[in-house]
Structures are given as structure tokens and as C-alpha cells.
Length: 121
Image (cartoon, rainbow, N blue to C red):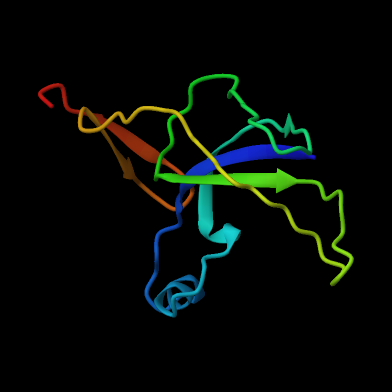
């Protein structure tokens, strides 16, 4: 079993788009409605109830405020319904905010962005 981390933001909404209609109806957005600006390597996990720490190989700027924790691999099927379940009791993410000294403007849906610096902040 492994874990991978993705960071990014929602794709811009367009009036009348399927994406916009889904969000208006309060449905959960599908993963293809995001622009992932960072995808980590896979980290191996143990299948036991204990604290496991994963350190990214380098500092990362999370643009857009979305962090996805992707659990990879299925190891045990539930006898009652034949489905796979994964139980996570706690997640802690350690980092620091760069605002108000920095801000990000997302320029277009392809993932281009502009980092703005405000030295007076």
C-alpha cells in the first residue's frame, strides 16, 4: 500500500458548463475538475494503526489550497459486501502560510499562475 499527495486548485468555473452545474447542485467535484500543480512521488505505507510520517523531497508551494491524499493499492476485501475500505483516523499537514506577504493569481485553466510579493505586509 502507498500514499501520494497532490496539491492544486479547482479549474475556473464557466457559466453553463457541466462543472459549474455539478457544483451548483452541491455534488462533490470530480478529481478531473482540479488543476494539480504538484504531485509527489509515492511513499510506501505500513498497514497498521500507528503514526506514519511522510516528508516531501523538497519544499512545495500549495497554490489554490487543495491537498489531496491519494491512498494507492487495495489489500483487503470486506467479507460482507466484497468492497474495499480504508480507514484513516487522523491526518496532520505541517507547513506555513506565505500570505499576506505573497499572493497567487491563477491566470488560466492550464495551470499558469503569477506569484505576487507584497513587501509591506
